[in-house]
Amino acid sequence: MQLNEKTCNEMRIRFDYNNMMSEFVGEEGIPRELLLANKKLCKEAFDIVQKNRGKDMMGWAQLPYDQEEVVEDILKTAEKVREKFKYFVVLGIGGSALGPIAVFNALKHLHYNDLPDDKRGGPKFYVEDNVDPERMAALLDVIELDKTCFNVITKSGSTSETMSQYLIVWDILTKAFGDKAKDHMIATTSASKGNLIKLAQKEGLKTFYIPDGVGGRFSELCPVGLLPAAVLGIDIRAMLKGAECMDKRCISSDFATNPAMAFAILQYIAYGRGKNISVMMPYADSLRYIADWYCQLWAESIGKDIKKDGTKANVGQTPVKSLGVTDQHSQVQLYTEGPFDKVVTFIAVDKYRATVTIPNGCEEFPNVNFLCGHTMNELITTEMNATAYALNQKARLNNTVYLPEVNEFTIGGLLFMFELATAYIGEMFGIDTYNQPGVEGGKNATYAMFGRAGYEQKRAELNSAPAKKKEYICE
Ligand code: PA5
Image (cartoon, rainbow, N blue to C red):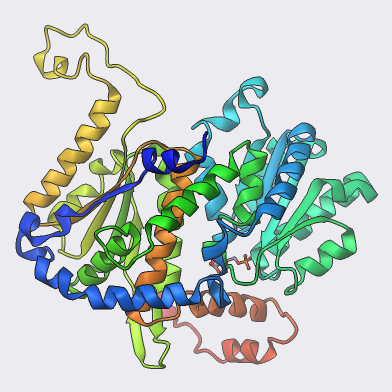
């Protein structure tokens, strides 16, 4: 793929928010004057984001520009992994897993792992983002250890789930390969914090670093996501270029030209008018895990109980993942007729990577025959438009992000657009977009219950919690 201005234009992501406006959905919609009245808020949010780019936890904003050296190293390492291994397994959770899952599913064959070796053209790929013992046992059943490379990813280097997976796998590797175990493990972690870096140094593991200013859910475009993507043969430079082009489009606070700002301010206004739920509904199987990734980004970044100035917040839209057309036959009933508490965001694809025609041969059944001769491409797009229409008819807010195609470039752009939108809306709410005390609360309670040193007080606190009443348990 050529990575120039022409690509930026041809692969331009469009954002259509007509159906958010009262002109199209009636009183539930956003009045034009209200949107215009929020220009100042957009400018304020934009200015803070611009001022803080590259600083503190906004290191992610510079990722499209400052990684040439590490990209070289990633590509060299990925090439070796691709030559030597048949399986590549990511051990990680949350922001250290959802990006790699989303990008893999978006950009590789939809049945990639089932393809024969010569058609797959790279190692089989697994992301282990849970500590379900059955899943770990199942993984060990399907991989061949001597042909497997593991990539343990944790920014903090201390997440219980990831560290326990690491310990299990490292034990198996050292028992099987002794000194050569290190050839089967790559670490991606903070250079300065946590335990994984110390373990990686002790064991001599090849290590990639997660920059300090890049939090988990903003990390797909750093080695967290770039190494797995490169191992899969994905053009990571095109992903970064797509992000850069999106960034360069978002150079003003004007929501008429900045799609990330438009998305943020519309969700912000809608939230203020009772739309507590943000449904992300791609009309492409390849993008279903982009919705998962978005859910973490939106939930963990905006769901906060205090503002930066210390006042009470308790804000945040609940993100929900949905898949078109599949969920038209489950969730859409609720979206159309349930409470007026949702904004539905469709992700549409102009040009799918395959065209499948519905054959003729059903002439005697006109109620089926109407499908014949059309393509599935037409059908899926028509169904999305029809669903948007049905939502409009019932005064339900919806908007659409259009991708010209699903490719490295547009995926890089899409991720960056949602990251910027998250940064903007965080500033509109006045909260700290980049912390996650609620997640850490659970992490700390786990450490305490498992007897980790330094968590004695927490353990005492947990032990003194009221005992459960038997009367509230159905046995
Ligand atoms: O976005 C975040 O910061 C979190 O979701 C983390 O990614 C998640 O908790 C995993 O953390 P770590 O990468 O430190 O293991």
